[in-house]
Length: 446
Image 1: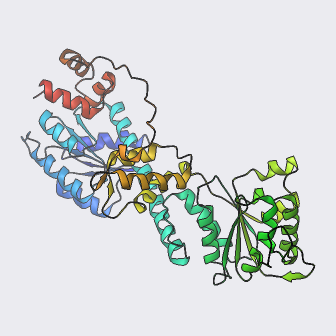
Image 2: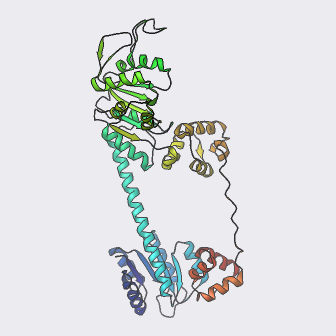
Image 3: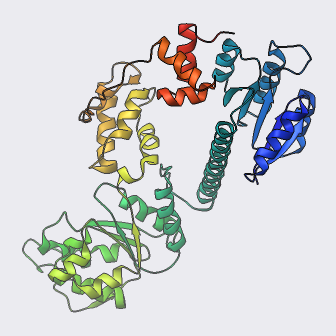
């Protein structure tokens, strides 16, 4: 049950608020002086404070309330405070709202309005605490991940990336094939390197073959090697990637581009560890951890008959889905910062532009953008034009209603019985915005 502390020297105020809150499952504590209120805060968990502004008889300056508020604010900066007084001083209200007071309400108060404010502030506080707990938990999990595993100096901050890393590290020591899926440029090879670095064969070779970068007739020779004369131009025997990766890891990027004959041979190697070089009948035995990656829709390729279903299930013992950069926005600014030239920094506008961009080219595009910005920026600060990003779509203009004049504000305050927050809601303004207009127009100074 949430708890409200009422600091007021008038016992009747404490009783009235206690009854009001008890009807809505809110506990109330009462303190009759600033000193007693601060003592309660030290020993009791409190979600919100409602405090009077004057505690000495025949005093209306509000100085005691201001001093108490500033003490509470200094000791408990996240604790919401509602100021309640029979003597409304606009200057003090504006100053305290600027200093962080949650609301400033006159006595006698409107029960419905006060209850709504209290409920909203308690819910906001609970949400903020839950967020702080989640952020703290994520930071602890990140530290544990970085301490326990070799992440190859990967730069990351987004929870979506952390989930991929946790699974990658969890399966790294298992001797099973891993399939990494995701768009081009998302960092699939880096994830493969992390798996290798935390595997049982971390001291073995890490061999990379991009199946999409070679003609189909040469992929088999690259994978399995070839004897002299096995194909045109093969003047001498050559070792394939499987032999080179023996005792380590073979990373097959763009696995969807592997031709049917290569798929069949790859399946056999995965099942037996045995293969023949092109042009040879002698079987060779290797022990290789295979990690593959693709941006293709392999199930669709299986339906189309261009990829073997049995090979897919052999490769896909563990699948890691690496989201596009736009789906892990927490990584964008840390990655950009890691790509800054020495002495360079991003201004806030450039940071906003990076976060707003869709990043169709993912991390690879971000690297290119930052390389350009480092070269073109005049001085140490990189600004939005230096990034060379396409202009964001211009939002449609918003037609605003006319600014409320003095008469409209005075009328709204009269209808609200002097409750500023209620008048602000009627005028479509925030409470702080209304206070600023009242101060500027000289309204309600008493």
